[in-house]
Amino acid sequence: MRSTEFVQFFDGGIEPRLDQLGGKGASLVTMTTAGMPVPPGFIVTTAQFDAFMHAAGIAEKIEQLLADLDPEDIAHVDRVSADIRDSICSCPVPDDLRAETIGAYEALQARFSSPVPVAVRSSATAEDLPDASFAGQQDTYLWLTDVGAVTEHIRKCWASLYTSRAIIYRLRNNIPAEGLSMAVVVQKMVNSLVSGVAMTLDPTNGDRSKITIDSSYGVGELVVSGLVTPDNILLDKVTLALITEHLGDKHIELIPDASAGALIEHEVEPARRAVRSLTDDQLLAVAQMAKRAEKHYRSPQDIEWALDADLPEGENLLLLQSRPETVHSSKPATKPVPTPPATGGYSFGSITSALLKPTT
Image 1 (tube, rainbow, N blue to C red):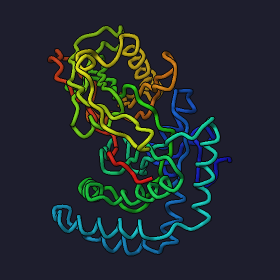
Image 2 (image 1 turned 45 degrees about the vertical axis):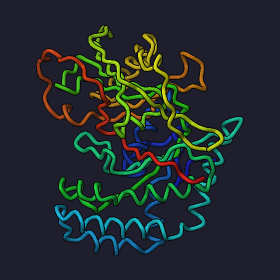
Image 3 (image 1 turned 90 degrees about the vertical axis):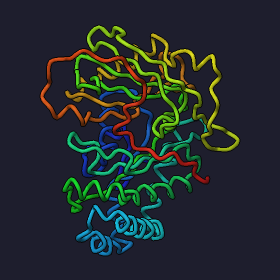
């Protein structure tokens, strides 16, 4: 199946337009085109979301609900958000649009010798921009194993465009609702042995001569939720020499359970907790990938990465996302200052994920 107006594959030779693919989708297409090791997938484009909204006939209702909304009246925003999301989730998706998504999902699965689980990730047109951070405001769903679950969670991602946090953020930052749309990424799920983030600067002071890497066992969502403290490593960006490291507790990991068809929490044995989750070679590989992303985008990057347990060592480092760092990058580069000792903890300033165990 080829890319169409409504579904576009990462490797389909398409122009990565933000208005069609959203921030996350455009980034994944860009990285794939640049030859970076991105797990394959496709994007349900904003054109499909817009066509769904038109067919559902709820755009005018949403506009009325959002008119003159006070972002400080949290209770009212919560009610409006719930009303809008319920409307989106209850309206049927037209058969032709649904067929496009099912065809793309089947084409993705056909690339593998056996069925693979996928992640479904929101990709709004106003996210992952240098001057905006939509952290946690739209949804991601992990380890979906059948097409029915995928199509249903795509619609949940559409609805998450109107979470209370997203509405309030847009209102407070004067981001107009006009032209706002949502794409959704459907991507092969990584069987994460170790995962984390890397920033091509020191987030404590904006020092661009450093790389900061946070890593922990399994899928990274336990760290997003604050349930695990990861290892925190600071490297020199030029020499990749180790400057400081702090070993996190890493007491639990999120791993797939084939019988349950979902991700489960698993206790990490004491011996693994006591050592760094990345070997020296793996640490250098992550740092080099981060530098490559920064060179490609020509600005400090905040990347998500994972080591896939199903791939051989040396080929298992995958890039899940790369986005502009939003806190320090808008400021002029300053003279580096001494770096305080690392304290551990992810800088998950722009990871968008909701740890949910979907019904499949």
